[in-house]
Amino acid sequence: MYIKHKKEPAYSIVNKIGGVRATARVLDIAPSAVTRWLSASGVIPQRHFGAILDHAKKQKLNIKIDDLLTL
Image 1 (spheres, helix red, strand yellow):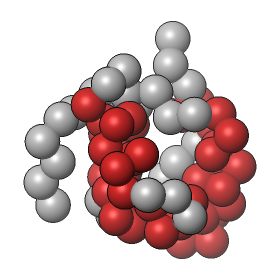
Image 2 (tube, helix red, strand yellow):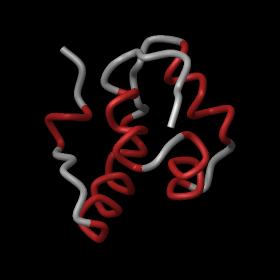
Image 3 (cartoon, rainbow, N blue to C red):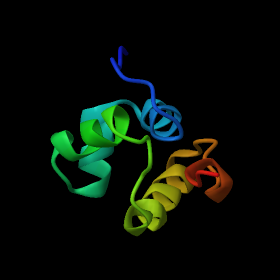
Image 4 (tube, rainbow, N blue to C red):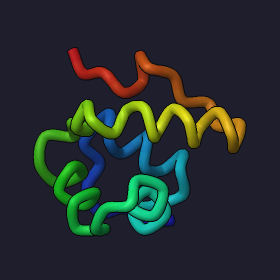
């Protein structure tokens, strides 16, 4: 999978989930919203943390709360 912009932590999380479209499906949002995370600051809005962590647990993905936070 190729993702043009690589802003962290969004890039790593989106990559682990399976790409922009897969992430958008998991969160029930438009793919363009996910693309904005990658091309802007790399910050994933906190309101999506729960759904991402739930999906990661169900799919046995290595995503933890610390991975979602920016310093």
